[in-house]
Length: 123
Image 1 (cartoon, rainbow, N blue to C red):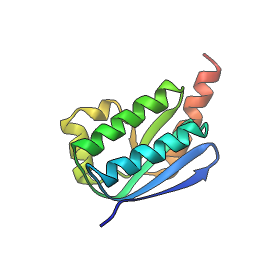
Image 2 (tube, rainbow, N blue to C red):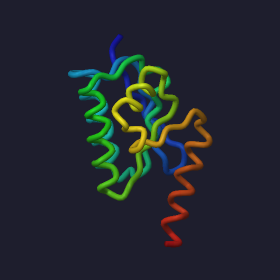
Image 3 (cartoon, rainbow, N blue to C red):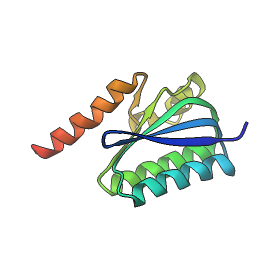
Image 4 (cartoon, rainbow, N blue to C red):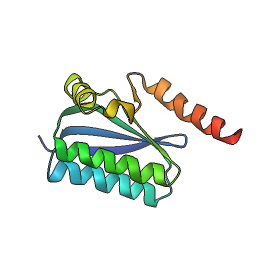
């Protein structure tokens, strides 16, 4: 199965619906390119929907970490939605669950961006 990325907007949050395998080559390159395009367009809040991602290898995980660094260095935030069991386990084993905030509910994930933005305004 080839990897696909579809971007949709929900207010000021870009939701990237990913499908397939995020592995060395096409999958990880697609993630990198999609996030880079969003950041270059000024997008600060990104939600990666992993509902249809069946597998992530170390290269794919590296791209996600690199994307996190790129987005946060620009003052943005990147979060995960619907990580499947294998992906969740990978985040646990690598301890990246301490870096990525993951949600199982899209509305809750979207609200979390609003809370972060509101918190920053009043600091």
